[in-house]
Image (cartoon, rainbow, N blue to C red; front, side):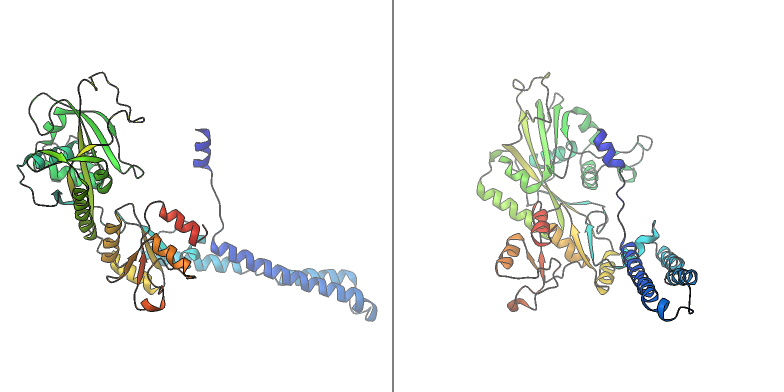
Length: 424
């Protein structure tokens, strides 16, 4: 803990580009000044002092050498740099750009690549539920839809911020949680009494969503009675759709019947996910598993660190597709950056298809740009391609000179790319 605290409070000071340039300029001036002083001193000692003894004596020579050094000092440079940066900072403030440190202004001017997050930066961070099901339109009263809606409502970290505005409709209340969970929470509130559902299915254990696992898991104990997921204890897992499919060996049909999830059906679901991702939608998968009362009695301790409960061989319920519309101001901003020869890259944890679709919508990549992956890059390196462009502006070979190429790197591939191609 002490080491973590030390690292958190440790201030790493690095010089800005402007400071490095000023240091370089000072070294050049100092070198020139000292060289001339040394040359002058040598000339005086070796020649002037003997050939023209009455021209200048030692005290006067020392004064002249000091004056020569002082003459090389650019006294006006600090104030000129400060005034110039202040003027630029004032102009940036009028453009609603607040710069805390004047010395970094020049660094902003030499930026040629910007890495941007997607959610909340390029998009509005206002998710809406586009579809829920298994691809085809489901009857809202079908057993599958009831189970899926209940699972989405329970495996969710969104909720009202306070009970002070409990009398207001849900869409007018302040909600806490991630954008995805808030959108799902609102969708579920239109189809059921959320308060009653949550109270009657108490949470025993849960694993919050994180970017490494890419899933959220909750374990519930259902109240006695009939319901879509009633009957003792059960767990619900919600997360990256393709990972959810791979964790399941059964699937719930629209009529509520549980059947085996074979390879063909998995491929069909993955094609549905790919189509939704290509429309710019974020797709989440939902699965569940009933827990046997004898194996998991009331006093059983669910260890979320050791996972002493089923994490595989789940029952797949369905998919929920969410859409986060791009910000209206982003495309013109990216166009302006392109005009200034600044390339914009997107860094996101979403499905590659979703990332590519949003990138097209905001103008990071062109509508006709070819999407390529790490394997393509390896192939080009093997063909002795010396320049690899990750933004889609450099032709890869002579046959495709008119085509733009965009390299889409997922997960750990990004660190491999930095190490292999950029020597980071």
